Length: 366
Image (cartoon, rainbow, N blue to C red):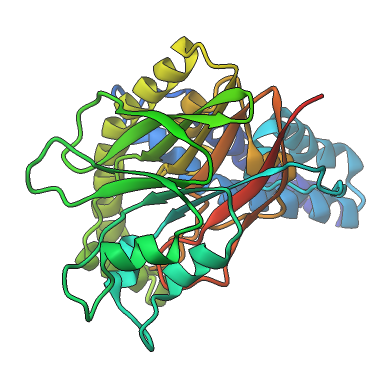
């Protein structure tokens, strides 16, 4: 029995070692350059799988009283503590809001849910109007000319509390209809699109006058993963019926498309990061639909020398994309280190877009 037990511990310990190594590789995959290794750069998507496996092994070794072996998954998780906290923050302390907080809300509105109206109202527009945010950063902003649907006049009427706005068409293609918008209670001094190649995505930098300070705000809609409705059905089919052949063929298709988008998005992320680094502004906010998770090259590069608001003051996974079983946080708010965030939340009550809105309160550090 002793020999069998020792062999079992050795076998399971070896499996645990493999999962520990894979967790470390995945955790540090954001340092892989996607333009050189596009497929490997997507490893971050599997981070929760390997994290969960190591948590399971840690609990297992503790239950069977193999404390020395339990050090393996424990040490592994300590080595990627920063990534775990970024992906799954747990903040036990929630300080009361100080006076004069700035509320920033970022939301991919998916053309306001197709510009539809229910009883003469658009649910997303009503949500924005009632959000009490000081600044709205919207992606996939679109309206319709027909009065049966949501028009620009409807939006301006409902958002009359925001006297300053700027709407920009994105992408280098004449066929692109994608736009981003900033609605603000504070003066927008300037707006300029960042230069990088994309057929239908982009970033816009605004200078906002807030009190005596000028704040740089960058609203992003980075390269989407270009998954068609058919691709998403393939992915859902893999979950519903995980047969070997279906998973193999489906995985190849999805990984190829995700890798292609990752390589394009990396160049865009580099452009945003350079713009932030060269900025003369003391106070910086970067937000929007990054189309990438917290464990990604995009998030790491754009977030250099910035704080992630959700990591700083959020709780849990904060999943912001809600369709087709792609359950990830791909919408982010990042702030310069002289700013502090409070109560960052992903509002999963709003189901009229394929994204949930993310918002937080921001103040200057004393």
